[in-house]
Image (cartoon, rainbow, N blue to C red; front, side, top):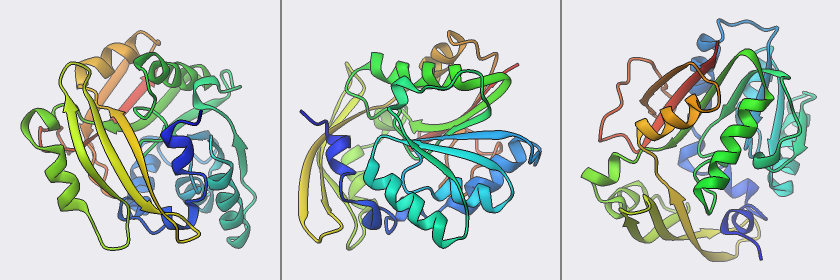
Amino acid sequence: MKQWYESLFENYARQYDKESFVRGTVGECDFIEAEVGRDKSIKILDIGCGTGRHAIELTRRGYKVTGVDLSESQLERAREKSREAGMKIDFQRHDARKLPFEGEFDLAIMLCEGGFSLMETDEMNFAILKSAAKALKRPGKFIFTTLNGLFPLFHSVNDFYKSAQKEGQSQCKECSFDLMTFRDHNTVVFEDDSGKKKELTCNERYYVPSEITWLLKSLGFKKIDIFGAKLGAYSRNNKLTTDDFEMLVVASKL
């Protein structure tokens, strides 16, 4: 049986590229460049690359990027976009929990819930972090975003989704947040690339900073910094608060 995140991305690549949450690519890549000191010799792994927006932008700036995703449909669109841009990018289909890489990359990125936090168990989510850690050289850096568990303690997730809804884009409804598991159960309503309206029952895991820090330390990361993730404007100046829906994590294997 397919999981919701597999069904969602089966025929949703072009519609996905119209969503508001994918609009911050340039600013997010500015942050990534600053974090690696604009060293064009590094190898970058983009985990949960989707339709390739970060991989394409970073390649445009002169970096060597490998993009991986579980969805063949998303990867097809990524390859199409890279060809249109006159670029040759290595896009591969892999499950983020079982990446085939070991000590090959200087930087791994996993942005906009690129797999992590979508899995159905905490063990599966941890397997993604473990897989990313294994893919990195030492020293290496891991930059990713995840849902901020501090947010639903102070705000209604339901209200947040309602305020973020835009005409013609996907919508989340019937949200219920479970304080025992820190999981948000909701129904996502979206239109696929064929114009067909669909509904999927989803659940996503929110994490608090201390959990993320402990998980990463157990995988050999020595320096872990966590910030508020502002769409298209990642910055080390954005101190994480209870108002941030997502957090930005920068972890280093020193």
